[in-house]
Structure formats: structure tokens, C-alpha cells
Image 1 (cartoon, helix red, strand yellow):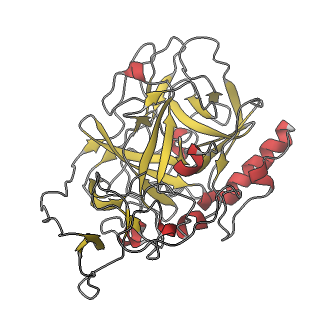
Image 2 (tube, helix red, strand yellow; image 1 turned 90 degrees about the horizontal axis):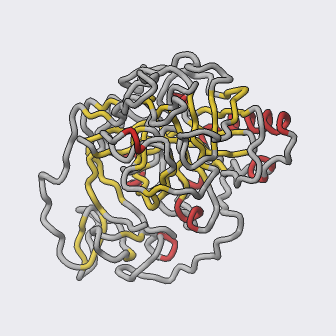
Length: 426
């Protein structure tokens, strides 16, 4: 995934969680939370599950053990419509511990979808919504012969800005294909790859550190991260699969989709609850699931990487640092300056260095967006930063035979523009 300096209008201030809406099928399934806009239908990746919430709503999830599903808490618990991260809280379970039905089917409509029913749900004890929007559902039966997803339990995969991990991810979910989409598009597995990761609180790269971006106070928890566009109604609970690993055939979940917004029919922005923030809870749920299911503990759970050591299983060769300022690059580790960026969406990636009034660029380079690039800086367009007011990232999509939705829509009330540096996969 390329790294470009672009201004993204991310309308977050008051946000609301996932929503359920009736889905187009004869079984009475419905659609809940966010969908994949600009993606493609796929019959692959059966570890990305469709979840029926009491046969009243749809969410998405990821199979992290044969009988354990990672999803969003608002998919299984009552939640407010509009969200202030300082006060919004979860209510009780909306369909009970045994009211969640999971399927590997690429299309949730029709008969014979082999739904497996839940028996227990693990959630954070804190009911504050932001940062706690994660749930682990244990199923009553094992789902066999399906690859499992590894939830990232290692915070340093973010904080250390590891060379083997890019700043892009893949989303796979069962939602609508746009913010005001036809309900017939819900309930089908869709995929969109190379979505840019916006920012992560505490990341050592200042342009990826949400804490250094004005306007995130009160709308984002340290246990979350901001992603790009593409997810819409029906995708809540779906995972952000780290792109470099995904391309290599490994399925590493960085977090579960919590909330987002819309501008007209366009799904805008996304907020994910990070899995590394809930390592102990995830391991507790999988330990329970393993005892019930009788299978061998997954390798990621048997030997969890929760410390500061960053690893991708030994599959990434060491990176040789040889490239100087202005040279073409693929990732940070190739540059002596430790910064591989592109000044524009259609520009090549080059090694660069930070700059400001006190740290001027060498001859032949100019300071653009806080980094040195060859040539003359383009004039700043004061209208480049856009904001959105009163948007809804989870428009309801009614269809027979269900009559109502059980989850509230995503509601965004104020606008926040921020600079997201998108990075090429390493």
C-alpha cells in the first residue's frame, strides 16, 4: 500500500455504534453495523463469518479457534445511538448468550446455511463503549476444516512500527456496499484490500500517532485505532487483517470494527477496537472454548506473543538499510532516515526526513507536509480539509420479512479532518 500525504475528512466527534437492519432472505436474517464499499463478493476466506444476532440482525466476525469468534461488543449488547467517548456505555446482552448464530456461508440468505449457535460470550467488565467494543463468542459446536485467524496480541507491532508490517489492512464483512445501499447487497461476504490505516494512539511515528492529531480528544480511546474508508452497515465486528501478512497467506487481526460514518451514500472512516488491548480476555475465552471443544490449542494461543518482541513467525528476511534521502524505497527499514513516504497519490515512494523551520531540507529538496521531497513544494489549498456534519454510517436497510432493526445507527455529529500518511507494504 502506498504512502501518500492526503487530507482525509474523518467526521468523528460524537459517534454511534453498529446497527442491525433486516437482511434480504427468507430466513428472517437482518443486517447490522458497517459494510464493504468498493469491495468484491468472495466465496473465499470462510474464517470471516456471518453472524445472525437472534435472527434480527447481521454482524461480521472472525474465527480465532474452532469454536471461538471475535466480533464487536455492540453486535451482542445494547448500545446508545450517539456516542460521546467520555460517557457512552453498553447495556445488557441483546439476544442472550445463546442468541448468536454463526455461519461460514458466503451468502447468509436461503436454507441450509449450517448456523452454529453460541453458548457463552466474553466481554470487558468496563461498560464504557469506546475502547471496550469487543466480544468473544464461544459456539456450541466446532467449525472444522476452516483456517483460523490469529488476533494480534503484541502491542509492539504498532508501537515499534515494525518493518515487516505495513500500514494497510484488508476488510472482509457481510454488510451493504454503500451507506444507503440496497438491502439486497447485505448478507454477502465482501472483501476490500489495501485500506490505509489512519493512526494508532501512541505510535512512535508522529503522523500515525492519534494523540498528536488535533481533534481526537474525547472521540477515541487509547485501545482503538482509526482506519480508512470502505466499511459500511453490516460489517461491524469484522477484522482489520494486516495487509502484508494477508498477502502472504496469514490472517492476522489487528482489531474489530467498532464504528464509522457516512457522507451521503459514501461510507467514511472507521474506528477499530485493537485486539492487543484485550489479549488476556481473548486468551481467557479461547481457553474456555478449547476445554469445551476438545481441540489442540491454536499455536497463537499456546505461545502468545504479548511482549515487546516483534515477529511475523520468521518468514520476513532481514532488511538491509542502504538507501539515502530521495532514493526509491518500499518501507521505512530500507532508509537510513527511517521514513519511506510519497508526496502525492501518484508519486513514487522515496526515502525522506522530517523538516520544519529549524530543520531545513538539503539543496534540491523542499519541505512538504513536514518531510523533505525533491523539487518545490506545492501551494497549500485552504479548502483541502473538509468536514462533514450530521452523517449516518449505518443507514437501515429494511426488507421482508423482518420489520425493524435492533441496533442503533452510527451517527456522526461533528467534523474532524486529519492528515493520514498511507504507507507502502513492507
